Length: 203
Image (cartoon, rainbow, N blue to C red; front, side):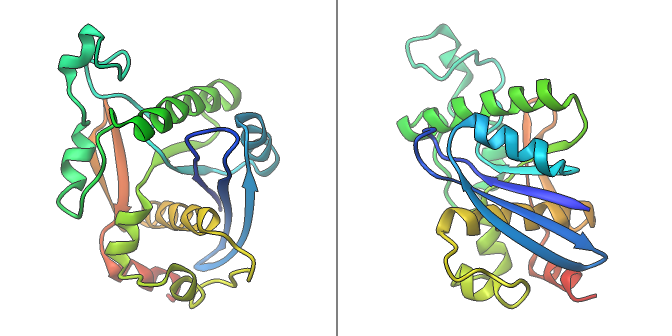
C-alpha cells in the first residue's frame, strides 16, 4: 500500500511538502520531499503511483458557489462548506473566502481536477486538515512525536511533516479508523477517530 500526503502551498513558487508512506502490514516507511509547481507535483504522483492521495487544502467550493469572489452573485452560498462547519468542533478553521485561503482553495480545486484528468480514477483523492489531526493525535511537537513511529530525516521541514500527517490520516482512513466530515456531494475532510488510531501502527 502506498499513500501520498501533500501539504499544498497557496502559490506555486512556495514549497509544497510531499510524503510517500509505504505500508507493509502495519510497518511503515516514509520518504519526504519538497516540490513547487503543479507540474512537479503531478510528475511525482506519476512516478510513485499511490493508491491514495491526501491533501492539506480545500479541494472543492461551497455548494452553490462558482467562485469565491464577494462581488459574484454566487456569494450567497456562504464562506464555509459543511465539512468546515463540522470540523470547527475540534478547533477554528479559516473561511475559504479569506485572501490566503481563497488562493489555496483555487489551487487545490485546480490540482484535484488535474489529478482527475491525468490519473482517471487510478487513485483515491481525499482532503484533510493537519492542525486538527495533530490536535486529535495529541502531538505537541510533530517531529519528536512522529519520530516514535517513523524514521524522520533530520533535515525535514514543516511542510513535509504536515504532509506526513496527511499521509498518516490516509492510513487511518484505509484502516477504518477515521471520520469523514461534510457532504459527499460538496466535499469531505477526513480526520482520525482519536488518539487510539495510533495503535494501528503498533499492531
